[in-house]
Image 1: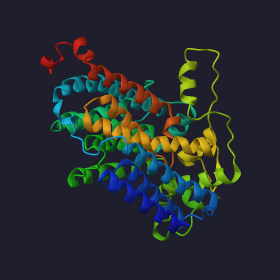
Image 2 (image 1 turned 45 degrees about the vertical axis):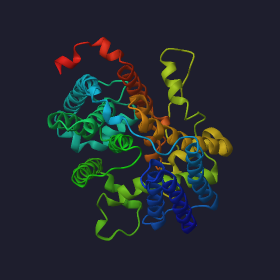
Image 3 (image 1 turned 90 degrees about the horizontal axis):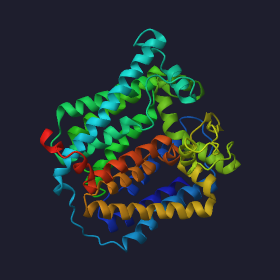
Image 4 (image 1 turned 135 degrees about the vertical axis):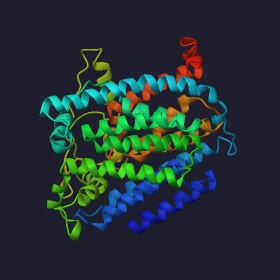
Length: 419
């Protein structure tokens, strides 16, 4: 069945590449990622359950639906477009003002988080020593260090920084400051998912500036990969995630290291999806797609009651809380409406590619990057269920509309002269 999935992936990639004249559009990248993840799962370096025939059908139809959704919208939009993204460099001043404001909030967040760790444990090194405990208390809401904001200031800062870097030559001090604060924040909070999100945001902006093509510069990519891997290894080590080896298979010299943990983290979502499809089991009666909106409205409307979420655990046969975006879509919409949703999603990708290739409107770029996040992280998460995803989207959309419309320039008439 894996061979059939491989052929289906190649077929869809060829169709998309012929239509879009690129090999690294976001739907193709989605397929490459899933091919890798499913390939890792099929290696069975952990004794995973076999993928059922029904799950294989779901996996194959998903990439077909995305492909033909893109293909149908491609018939509507002209293929050859001239990008105007680089022609509006005057917006850099407004972008800089935005990143200074968000960066200041990020500084407050980072400083108070590390201060909270120090006050709780009596030493700053506790961020490395008690990583697992800090993460678990933060995840369950028992205790979270520092001053929190509704908006994910680290994600928003990275988006704005990536946009600035793609418009003008990189500002070394600005890059070191923002990236440094983001790294220190996520080391303290011990979130590998947040690191994945931040990396995907930056890549998404690069894709947007290159009309949906991943333009890779070797030197910069090497630095980014080293930093990314270093952060994942650091967080995995401080959270003592090598204990997952107790349920893993033959790892030879890698046994006792964090390698099985990372393998498990990357591949177990397929097992969770497989078990969900087999059992049709989910412990929470909620609409995952619309729950974040309900949570936001509940702040203002007392009558709206939200459910505290704890992920359903699936035995694959080892326990996992991951189950990919497909589980949540199927659970919310069922197979028929879920198929329509995925088909439309493919069309939305093509529409946004056209929009960002013909205008510098940042609002389209914000939409494009958040669609990319949903696809790129789909193998272990459903971003549309995450509060931070929507707070990031709404905040950046407001900033982008203010910049696009010229309202921000009227609000701050001297911004250009001061910068």
